[in-house]
Length: 69
Image (cartoon, rainbow, N blue to C red; front, side, top):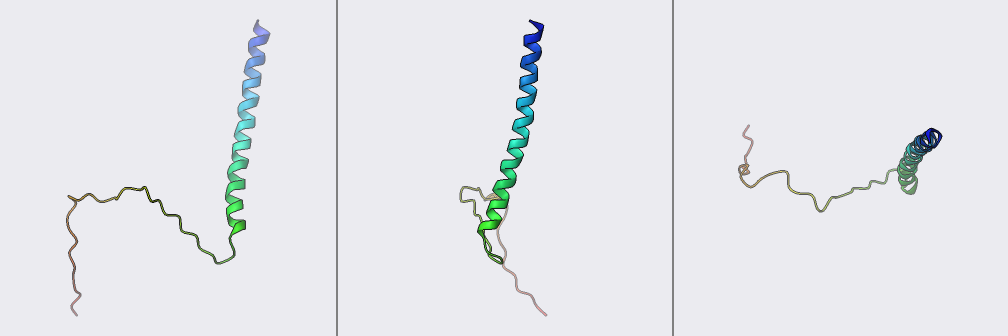
């Protein structure tokens, strides 16, 4: 019985190590793949359409000003 428990623990540890390395490799491949698809000097802007405004309607109002010299 003790051998079965140690075997399960060993398999779980090996699986966690494998998962950690494979997820790191996936992240590296995803980031390097994006830079290879773009030409040098090309700019890509990602917009988050679903983002909420950082300002509340009760924060105040915009005051236009003119600089006087």
